[in-house]
Length: 166
Image (spheres, rainbow, N blue to C red):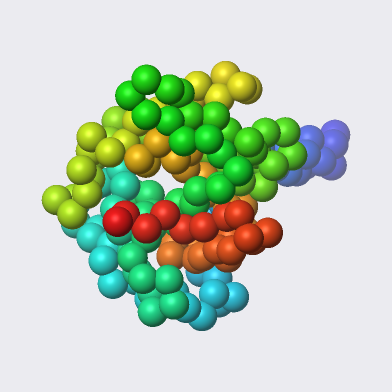
């Protein structure tokens, strides 16, 4: 009887640990662990004392580019259609593409003085998800960027680029 009680306790502990591990897992593009694959990462502009939705980062090869509040790089896709005051943007990244390039969205925009919140907007994608735009360009993450400041998506297929704030 005592052995079966111990076995039941072990099973319960394993289940609890499994559940905790499941909920603790974050996809790679949302994970802030260090990644040494990107040697150009030079975080010079991110200000962690103020909580901004979008800020800037820079590195010697790419100059200044947009990042989210955790320092994750934001990208634009040249196959997208930009929006303006009268025309909604249109994303060309759907299906499998949207798994590799997840849409960036924040319900409110807070930016440092070097950026203008009026330059940001949002739209509803074909999959009914909301996506943020900058100057009408839909904004994305790249799933292989695993650490703040990574720019592994830069130049992929000649169509994906970090977003220069100018």
